[in-house]
Image (cartoon, rainbow, N blue to C red; front, side, top):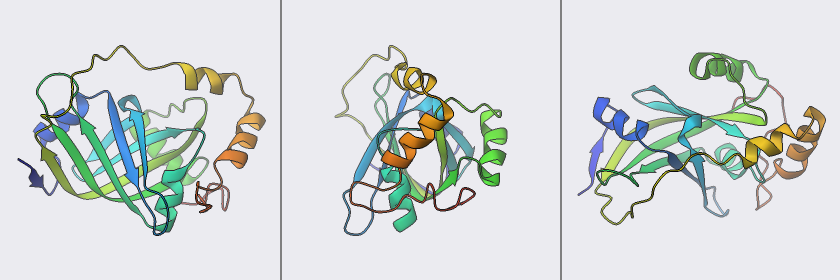
Length: 189
């Protein structure tokens, strides 16, 4: 049975910290719904009502476009090992663009100032609803480790090549919505 909470407590935080993958869902009016998986090594719990993840360069940037257009964001974890549970965080997100003051401050505060090669932005979620549900339908999977492909790809690129790739692949969404990544290099959505 689903249960709702206004914020994270120690038990709910523990659920998130035990997972290896999380999913981010976003949408904008008239656009496709986006759902993206991420490794939890990039996720940080900032407070009982805020989380953030360090987002690496990828083949698209749907979440940024949807946040710019609409702002709604949902983050979900589910247990693939141990006791079954699904946990969702519902709220509003913002993109902290790499190179901006807010990005630098949060990078220092939550990520120890360590910026992986290929870092593109930090996505912050401020949420007002936490919901858990049973997770009985989620199958067991065994975690073997993070995939090295994206890190290896980014390591093989120069700064100029990464910038050119982002400008080609990350400036607009699948539906042509602007992501804001290059509108103002210090933008905070």
